[in-house]
Amino acid sequence: MSTWQERFASGIDKQVRDAEKGGAFEDNPLVGKPLPGDGQPYREDWWITQKVAQERVGVHALPLPLALRREAQDLRKGLIEDRPAASEAVLRAAIADYDQRSEAARRTPQPGPSVVIPRVDTEEAVLAWRQATMKP
Image (cartoon, rainbow, N blue to C red; front, side, top):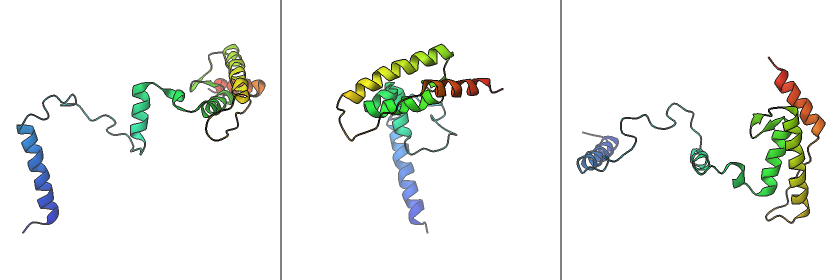
């Protein structure tokens, strides 16, 4: 006597076999290749990450105030686009550019809930960048 799980599994197996015989999997680009992300830890938002990478939207998917907050967090650590700044001059230029854009955003009404757009202290950011780049 079989359990309901065995009957259920055998029904699914039959559907897969019938689909294989009907040629449903012949144009599958993943045939013979490992599944993408196999061996990686499971993330509930895997589909969002995949879509963002596919569409190459990055921070532009965020509303402007949130994107500026995110950029300010990175700049305070001496990072530009999630990487350490190439030089102090590049970091200072990025902060100056951020200051102009954030000041314009503060003066313009933004849609959605109110979000504080922070300021970035250039000297603190440069100090953080120096400390990060001096590590062995």
